[in-house]
Length: 251
Image (cartoon, rainbow, N blue to C red):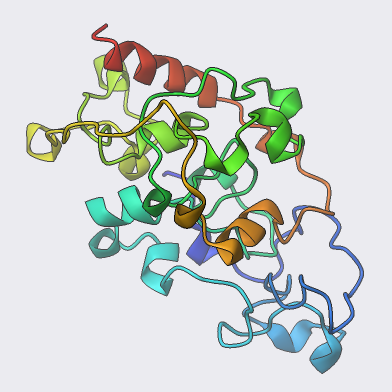
């Protein structure tokens, strides 16, 4: 059996990292993540004073739909993978497999929203080493969020100009470990034809493409002050990025 989807996780599971102490109600991080007891919030010792969300309505952060979180097959559409997958910071407060989660957990895992206009070609300056996972975003690439190139494997692989245009190489040997979350096509019927890449790579993305509220949210993950688990260091991304790069180059 494959890993349980995030939506199946219940209270009682171990907390991924020791949560920070309750934030004051004026904190920008207040209610931006779910309480570790969610959805069985009656177990929360802090009750109404808890700084973490006890319901979806209480959450002060954008959320995917419940069906997308549970990875319901009907919700796993091409549009979801290209425009929503890994574009929101994870609000889940219990330990789970970050690689099978539809939310983002660190900058190796996160994707900028497509509406800002970056293309599928990989950025040569983007930090790829696992040890760089905790670096400030601006230290990974001098253009930061305004870079017109893809930052990391996920931005490239799930970009509309790349997503499911190349066959999955894992099918040659064993079953694909990414299963339904794979950015490569498994059947001919899944294959997409990539549109022309009209990205202007010669200059940074214009300021008008970068909404201030989105930039602030992207550069301030709700768990930034908490320890990042070693398992979330981006292991495995380099391999898929290399495969993507060779495919885009015609290899």
